[in-house]
Every structure is written in structure tokens, then in C-alpha cells.
Length: 293
Image 1 (cartoon, rainbow, N blue to C red):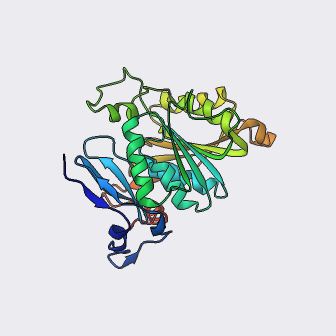
Image 2 (image 1 turned 135 degrees about the vertical axis):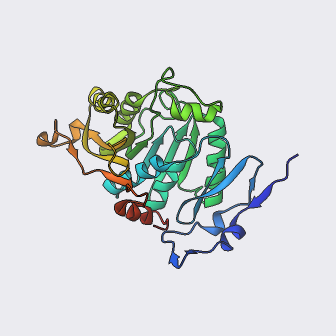
Image 3 (image 1 turned 90 degrees about the vertical axis):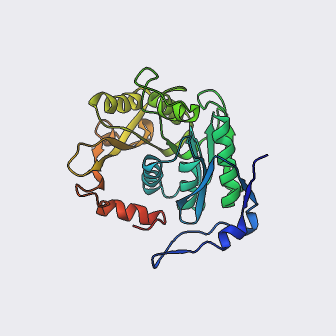
């Protein structure tokens, strides 16, 4: 039996709310709702947003900038959401970031991998989100959602590559997060379209290069009856071409006629400048999640 380190409300009380003189903003987890949570061998507990933490496997899938940007873009363009859905929710990164940013929202996450569901449930307990974050296990294309469920905000971080696109990781958790084991970006669009409430928004992240990948997003939206209302190219390092894109979609039937057929392309968001410094705008994005800039 491996030794387990217990983490819970007491651990949070002993965690400083400041970083180099800068106070982390945002809601504190409800200490009364928190439970002691074991940190097992092979796991880490890492900062997610503000005072929220996330359990991850050392050698498995780890949350990334893509996830945080998806939650930021989604909540920025749908700040009044009361009910949210995260498709292919993984570790619960996007779902918990949405819950942190929108304190009045209830979030449902649907995830197929048992190991990811287990980690998400530990993070939910640690952060005291039991009342606002529901975790369901299943392939969201066919499981986990009833036909009549509707959401104001839906998010997704689809895998970028078909199974035959390259060398796959040896860890099964990584494979499903990077390769299209259970559907592609078009599947995310179709499921989102079925479960959006009137006037609701669907936000996802996907590759913007090569052009073929960008075309897949727009074609997937079109086939599902969605319209990419606006999208934001993401430049990982100043001077490079955009590698990723953030896409905000709505159902065509919910849009004024003049909006249909023309997407607004925003200026690129630069993650790091040529000299390696964090991009100025991305600094403000990090601060909006309670991270030091």
C-alpha cells in the first residue's frame, strides 16, 4: 500500500494568498464543503486558477494553455451563463475554470476515460465544487446527456489529430486527449448544436495551421447548423504564424440574418514575444484567472 498524503481545507488555509507581493483574486473555495483528499503516488496537485487546484498524473495527460484559453474565451463571450456543459471534459480543467470565472454557473462535464473522471472528482472535492460541478462518465456522442438537456454555454477541447496522423504516446490518457479516438471537431459541433439553449454559445479550441485544420472547424460548424461568430488566432511565439484558434459559435437559427455567413477574425493573441517574454495581453489573461502575470 503506497503512502498517501491527505490534502484538504487545512492545506488550503496554510497556503499563502499572495505571490511576490501580488494577491491572487477570485473566489476562495468553500472550506466547509471541502474534504480530505488523498494524493496518491504518481499524482501531483497543481495550481489551476486563483485558489483552485487540480489533480493530475505525473506521466499522464497534463492540462495546458489550450484549456485555460478555452475557458477564458468562453466565459468572456458568455458571462451570464447559468448552466454550462464541457464535452470531453478530461481532468475537468475547463469545467473548473468556468466555475471559477462564473460563480453563479452550474457545470456538467462528460468524460469517457475512467482515470480522468476519478482525478476530476478528487479536484472537485478539494475545491469544494460538489454543489456546482457534476461529472458524468461516458462518450458524449452517445452517453451522458439526455436529449432534452440544454445549456447556455458549451465548451470543448477536441483532439487535433486522426489516429494515423503520427506517433502516439504510450500512456492511454494522452492518446485520447491528442488523437481522435472518440470523435473529432465535427462531432463536438454536432453534439453542441443539439444541446445549446436558444441564444447559447459553443466555444472550442483547435489548430489554425495548416489551412486544412482550420477548414475542418468551419466545415464542422456548417454541417451542424452552427455559425462561427468570431474567432481568435493564437500565436505561440511572436513572429510565428498562428498555431491555434479559439472559436465562438452559435446556432444559425438564433442569429440575425446579417450575421450569417461572415465570421469576425480578431487580432492574434501572442503567448510569448520573440525574446521569450510573456505577451502583454496574455499577462492580463493570466491575471484574470488569478495567476501572477
